[in-house]
Image: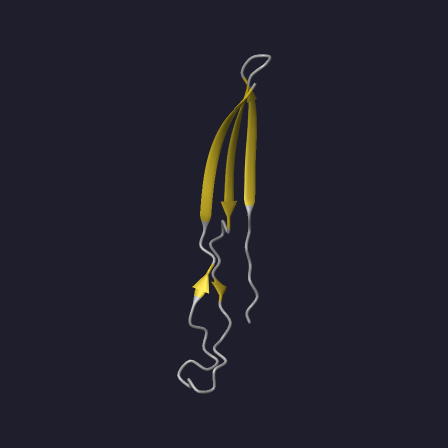
Amino acid sequence: APSSRSLNVNLLKTIPIVERFKLELRIEGANVMNSPNFNAPGTNLNALATFGVITGAGGNRSMQGAVRLIF
């Protein structure tokens, strides 16, 4: 099967508000370069149309953000 590649990134920023309170901003991303991860080629000899052919891929980019108040 073809190799898979993925670049995951996590960015974090903590902002002090007052002595007891902090605000935390976070952004996380999986597969940020949006590289396709191809499935294994077909191995069924009875289906010659798909034998040795890669018919799918996965690995979509996903991102999420969060804000947290620490006290």
